[in-house]
Length: 178
Image 1 (cartoon, rainbow, N blue to C red):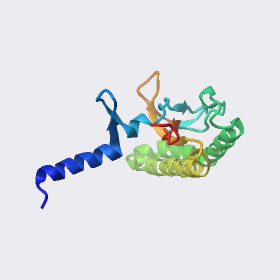
Image 2 (cartoon, rainbow, N blue to C red):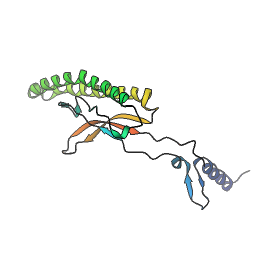
Image 3 (cartoon, helix red, strand yellow):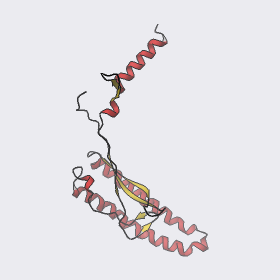
Image 4 (cartoon, helix red, strand yellow):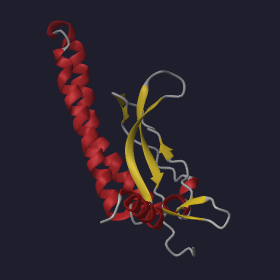
């Protein structure tokens, strides 16, 4: 029958084998972080339209960022942004009309006339997130990139805007020798 010290020694050995090793000078080297390439800062694509409803601009800038050179083709990047901008082109004019009507009737309805705009804005965000998930699963995850819609504070004020963040996903370097 094994005692508690033997079981602790076995579990410590088990953790050493799967999570890291001791180097020649006695330092602990974590294999999970040691064999990953460094992660770069995400690329932010800001709204470039002339209308913003609840922080969501009516279009995003289509200029190819230099940080993505060698990671994704400019044509693929442009097609993705065209799909995103087409969703915004379809949904945001309706949101603006409801916002205008809601502001006119706001005093009479005690603010309840703004609820349709809030719901439509949420629907637009969900449509964009669904499109970005599709893009990630079909193309960008294979390239080591991940697109997402994120809230960020504006540089010049306390207002919040939605930006597209392109994050670099770290890859495990499995072909690197021990």
